[in-house]
Image (tube, rainbow, N blue to C red; front, side, top):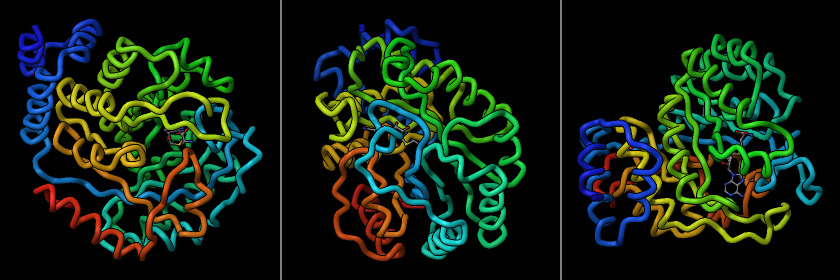
Length: 335
Ligand code: SAH
């Protein structure tokens, strides 16, 4: 049965949630084959390049209350910081000089950065570098997204987090799935390369939820999707829930690759936090992107969405060289 579904996916037949769930539940032997096919589709549609993107986490202030996230506004246990525009611009320029071609500017939903301030940061980075700019600053109005696009922003990353309305509303007292999806559609309409994504292992999630998550990515349709395991953060309401499974995360990445063949799929940082062997391995079952923090070291410790061991901190340039070498070890070409 699973072989028929794989064949249909290869021939671009649109799957149902039920068929995807069936694949998720296939046995270990079947999965060896499914991973292999996802890797082949990745090579056929995306080549052997691994895109290395720089990420600057420029503010950990957030007005929202997402139950899983350490930045949520009810967490009084973290020290909050904001990078000044000049500091963000200087960091992006340093990243460009170190060889990066894309920078992601990410933050909590922090209204201190008005669209005008963000727009000026984007324009200044564009003036001084050839960087593609991805923004990941949460939900905004159509007009604000439109303004930022005109200022030069190329891409926007806004994960839908879960495609199940019930789970979404239990985890977000501060927003609706409908608005999240509307934002993604607006971004797409405005010509942004649009990234979404979801977490694996959220409370109440089932195989059917994951299947619907993948179908939602396809319906927007997204150019990129970050799929990573949920990691409990001790300072959030979800502190006592178990982390998501790395293997299930890999399976979701492989299915996303099989369904949306030309989508960019990062090996998410969260996957490396739980198990760096799995993180490397995810490159062999569909992933083709990786992000590297270039946030100034004094802030990295404070951007605690979930607990993370930052390892040895080196210069932006040396950290990039290390990552390029790690990609080459996997017989892939860093870009
Ligand atoms: N404010 C921005 C950026 C959010 S943080 C926005 O709303 O889009 C980036 C991502 O981290 C989130 O989209 C979420 O998928 C992920 N994240 C947050 N808490 C997490 C946790 N405890 N475990 C794993 N991933 C988490």
